[in-house]
Image (cartoon, rainbow, N blue to C red; front, side):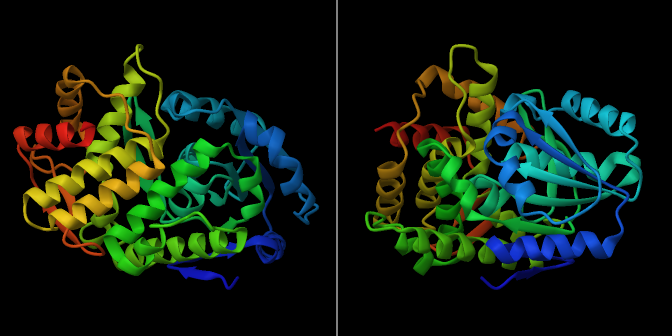
Length: 355
């Protein structure tokens, strides 16, 4: 697959990506390499990655515990201390090998350690391949509030190898599909239409869909790196989705949701808000809802959960002057930015999602 050129770095694929990575390391004269990963990837992915990496530079492995609950400043402090103890300097390279938690946290650690050192993302989950590893957004959660602390800074490169998808459970694969569905809904109706029938999907089809998804995100980010305009479209489904995800994280009676599971629910509800504003037709909304719910189970949200979810909306990082802002659909394949919704409208969207 041909590399995708992003502003300031390239996104490389499969075997060719390792050649590019090894050449980059050889040309850059790094003083040391530090791989940030979690215990799952250490067991299932690290050996394969090291087999394909050609370098004589000393490599240190920094392992953290998996899970969104570990995407925190506390974990960053531990990693910064380990980097210091191991003698990492400003010419060191961090390689983030893992899913979205690793690429988000690892990019933030690299961007702030000694005021910024080089990093490379090697995503190992579908979600990280099509979303988290691309675009330069790095950060951690503040308690249960998603991505409240962070920076936007680009990696030196991204290496996407679909081999790692073999290590994923089915629910992790579904989680990544949510962001791919979103890319079609906000940018490319023809891409969205492919997801109407996934029964005959094979490995080559999946690789092509991943490539298209990364292309869509890169096209959007390339126009608006700091998210003052069109990049806000990527937040479709995330205003309500992040609030739902945060609520499940903080509520001890609920099982934690995967990111894609929460975003899938958020997309259905925000598509309903789009219908309320006559931005999409009832037929388009029905198509969106039935497609998403054919892939994702309905989240067990009760009516008394909704007030807590609405309360969490005020912390959404896209808000301005205390007003909750949504990126809604303007027909399938287009968006309308900076939209608002009243609590009664959100309640109606919630009830329709459950129906």
